[in-house]
Length: 161
Image (tube, rainbow, N blue to C red; front, side):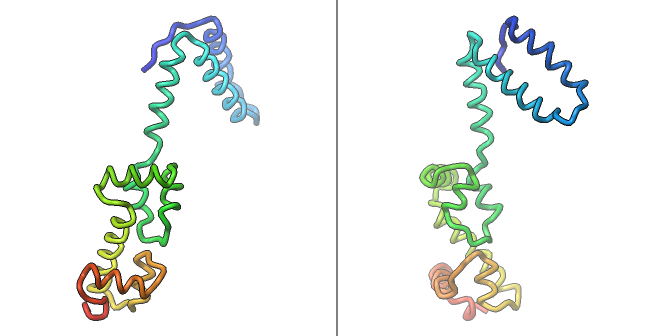
């Protein structure tokens, strides 16, 4: 929370914003956007502007989604790490650092393991073809999928059945 002294400019803003709530015209949304911009500029002119900036930085830092959550949401889609980084509003290097800090594993290794676990579950519980399992588990290349599957579980998907 930031406590600010009410300056004449902020008092004037308060008085005009109240009138906006009774406005019913077609430009209400753009008007409110302008009023919000006005408020931010007025807050940045206060003696406590550094506290205001810190407050907004705190709000922004919480709006960046958790990288593990981001990956988990789209785990079975054939997305590249760059795609996950973009979805989570991070650069690729920042995404990799944050992900590794959260899981203790690099994202590529973690994603591959989770996809293979899903593929193993499909192998054991469905009659899908190996190619269908490959696609439904987020892999693009069948031969690469089979090699990875065998490396992790000691058998190919067909042999495991």
